[in-house]
Length: 317
Figure 1: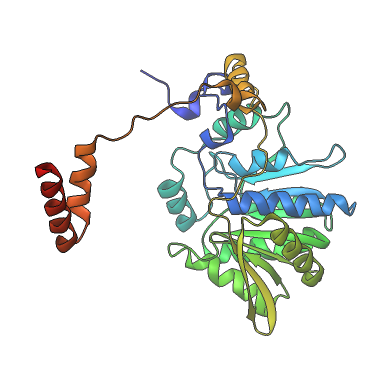
Figure 2: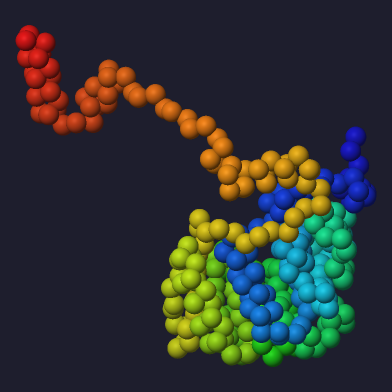
């Protein structure tokens, strides 16, 4: 019998060979935006570390870790196997994350990276004890869905962010997480949080000036041509709304457990001459009887009758 997940070592847990094999919800639009915001900050040499509150199985953490600069620190805070201190939070943990363990997170993360991030195992309210104020340039909040906890996470992250830092709120509009929506928009109306953009699952905001970010973001969207967007106004301020269905995803971190054979096959398939080397496949033309049956099925009856009469006259000749 297999040992419970919590008792297995990281070495014996399944090893993902691509990011899509890691459990979690991290869609194309948000991968593109994470990548864009981090690259935009790097292009402007903006200093700061990375922070994630709530890691689940590590999907977004793996993505963030690949964008970490050598001099930066990446901190991940999650309860993992620790019990929550209040009954409502414990109930949510049992319902939503019954299989979540720190070992599973570490196994997934180490499948893509040589070193783990700094891990704070406990309530997200503890993160301020481990991260310096004004030291974070990008923070992803995806911990508790309960209003009082999310509200506290937002206030804590506000102190931890740099002047131009970005905060991302997950599940800001999900029907099963009304507390997240309430805390997010309350921060906009009461705490000075300024929206930059939104996707179907995440809210992106800053306590700095959002207009230069929005201008640069819109230029980037226009240059790609595969991202739908619109600009709405909330309380007189612009808000970019976007969707990336069918858009090309950014480069994912490569798994350390991808087999050599799979790598060779993928490289061969992606090589410039790969398509030219394949013989052309000739599809047989449909039989005349099949064409006639299709014509009979799809053409109007008056046209079908005319074709039948014409065919009979041709046979008599």
